[in-house]
Length: 164
Image (cartoon, rainbow, N blue to C red; front, side):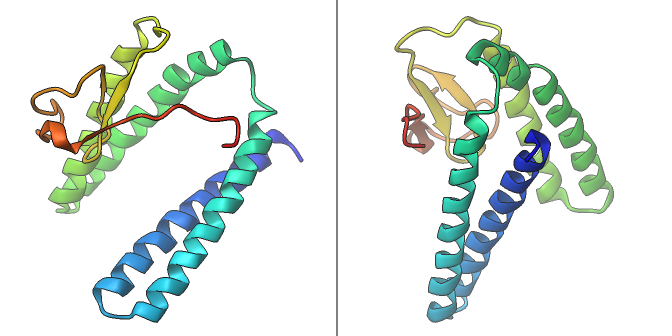
């Protein structure tokens, strides 16, 4: 199977898992516990499937330095352009909350691009804002510069294990 098709399958299954998890949360909020459990099982299944495909992709991608250059270069630039267009479309449609979330996503992408300009340091810890995704080296800031979240809303980014 060509790499592009494998990557597309990974994206599709990952999106389906995310939607199923959101559907499960809504079912639970609406008091439909049996449906919520079934949808959670669906999400877990799809996350497992996506994980398996991620393992296959890992063997088909380039060396670490090349991957970092792609992730923080062209891929991030495309993402920022897409997020800007989506934020504008949401604003034009009167979806202020969605526009703000998409704008925050773009701000986080810009911050990640700036972070990547500095060489990675062995043992460097990173804190991730659980509200907007902003990444801060070492300790959390007093307030997230993107969304204003307090330090308690930051969680350490865990190391990637060989099992993943």
